[in-house]
Length: 394
Image (cartoon, rainbow, N blue to C red; front, top):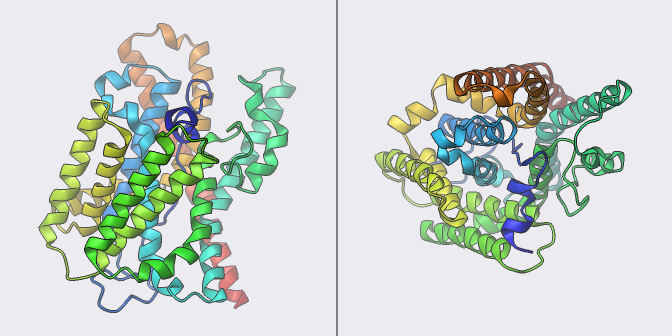
């Protein structure tokens, strides 16, 4: 199965498109992990620019889905958003970087206690919002059905698929249809990457040269691209994608942390130039491998940045958006579907361009409001409560 034909990650159709991202990697401020001796970047280092990267990924995916659900000519004005689905890939690479940054030391010679803490921390980061949104969708479908308002594409609301959704296994090759909350496929795939990390960590610690780490990063992306774009019938392509990009991010983290400290200014230049090149390349429909490689270089540059790029990505608006981005990913598609149906009844398709753009901006604002409510009411309180329960159980 070819990459373009099978990639449920960015082109599974649900009302033309349903790709999304839901990767949550935290805000990167941990102080309970020991740093590896001699490294220039310790696990307690707070990296606001990488939280800002999450905001960029969120905007890419949101822009992509906005035009899919509310066609307003957005791709004509911002053509790079036609590849906004690569925000998912952005997150997978970022996740590998951050998980390695935070947990490598504790899992280098893993004990069952360290593995249990790791899995629990990642589970409570993903699951509360996932199950809350899923429950909300179940209620929505039941209410719509009782009111006689059948939803489009009924095969995407199959009750038999709820088992896979609840168990976070729906991106592992079953079911064949990515229904209910389509963005949640990415957290199902991410959960697979988390399960592999305790096995990956000891191998990563053996990488002691920057050149070796960079070769691994390039090879991980290259092999992933070849597998997904080949004619091979790849089982569960989402797992192939997440593992390759997760390993790429992990190797990039090792490239930053091993050896002598890198020049400060090089990170700002690398990250800014790489992301600008991505925007140009995405607008020109450049190949997947090149675009994802540029996103990887953006993360590498941001992690090393100390100047203008760090100030931009570490600004309050981008850090806030990065902090709530998981809730944005997990709720935005539902908001878009509801707004699409509402605006269709109001004659959206016949509106002029200015009115359509106003509706799109209103929709973006609504997405952010809903995401903020979910973050402050569900995501953060649930994570804090469940972390505290584990601490009390020790």
